[in-house]
Amino acid sequence: MARRLGIFGGAFDPVHEGHLHVARLAQRELNLDKVYFLPLNQAVHKAQPKYSAERRVELLRKALEPRADFALLLTDIERGGLSYAVDTLEFLLKQPDFTGADLYYIIGSDAFAQIFTWKNPDKLLTLARFIVVFRPGASFSRIERLFAGRERFLDQIYLIEDAGVDISSTRMRERGVGRL
Image 1 (cartoon, rainbow, N blue to C red):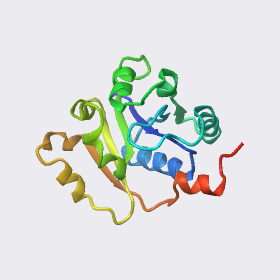
Image 2 (tube, rainbow, N blue to C red):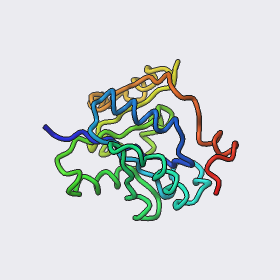
Image 3 (cartoon, rainbow, N blue to C red):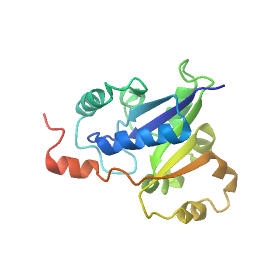
C-alpha cells in the first residue's frame, strides 16, 4: 500500500496552533502517514510574508519538533523565486521520499476557491488529492459551483469542516507573536 503523505503549503507567517490543528485534523481524517509543512518562498496570490524565510523556518522547526509525524520541507525556500504548487508537486514526485506515495495537499477553503487562478490548475489537480478545510458554516456548494465543467476532478477533493481553533497569522502578528 502506498504511503499517504500530506503536504501543507503556506506562508506560516507565523505558524500558530491553528495550522497545527488543521494538520492534525487532516492527518486523522485521511489517515496520513506524515504531514510535511511547506513554507512558501514568495507568495503569488497574496501579500508577501512579513517575517523572513529564516524566521518562519525557525518558528516552524520549534513548533514541529515534538511531532515525529510532522516534518519541515524547504523545497520552495531553497528553490527561491515565486512558489507555485504545481512546480513543487512535480518536483516532489521525482524525489525518493515521495516516489510512489499518494500526496494530499492540505488547503483552506478560501485559498482553494482560487485554485483555477493558480498556475496550471488542471495539471495540479492530477498530481495530488486536495484536503479542503472549511471553517464552520462555510458552504460546500461553492466548491461544486467552482468545478462546474470540471467534475472529473471532484474525486480528487476531500472536504473537511473544522470547528476547532479560530486564529489567523495576521492576528498573531498583531499580538507580537513570533518576534525575535
